[in-house]
Image 1 (spheres, rainbow, N blue to C red):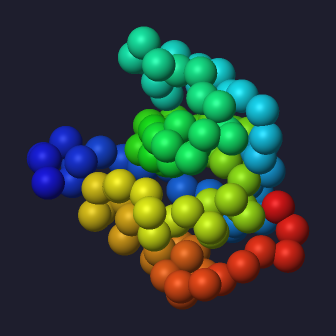
Image 2: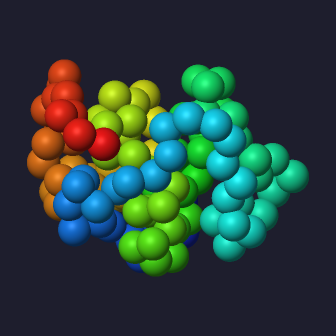
Length: 109
């Protein structure tokens, strides 16, 4: 783990219910979240979808960044598959214990 990942302040949602982002179509991430050449993500493509979620979780600067780009239902389904620095995974799971439980399902997005 890098020193940057260990020291970086991460934005956390107050609850999963706040995450009301898209579940279909394409998403163009703002440049403050994704400054690379690939910043448009097709949510139907599993690799694109996971990569977009990883970038948003790691680089979000505001609650709005999380709320408009992540879906609670989708996050529950892919949480274990996301490649995240350990400090951010621990912080999210401490705030949102339902992510720690395998097989949790959402009733609403």
